[in-house]
Length: 90
Image (cartoon, rainbow, N blue to C red; front, side, top):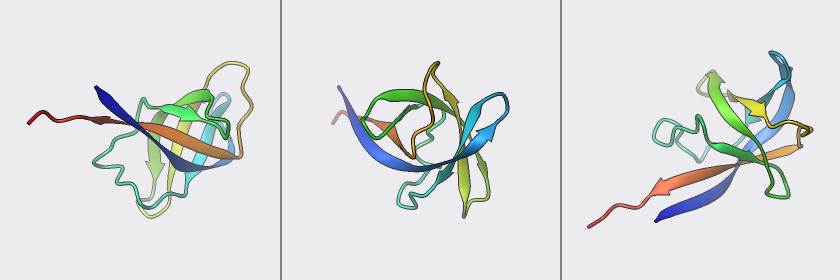
């Protein structure tokens, strides 16, 4: 069984590279080295799936996420991410 946590990733910044989204990561509480978000699903304010994370780029102090949107979705103002936590067996 897997636990899924929904956390705020950041805000839409602008379009880049053939209509991909650049998201300014605002959440400083998540360690993206331990929890690598590449390939995870991106959600909008209504918790609908709107894309997936392709890469984390930029400076460690002000990172950006490159998101590939699913077809027919406009970029939301606030973006959330589904973090899948693995349950360890004792």
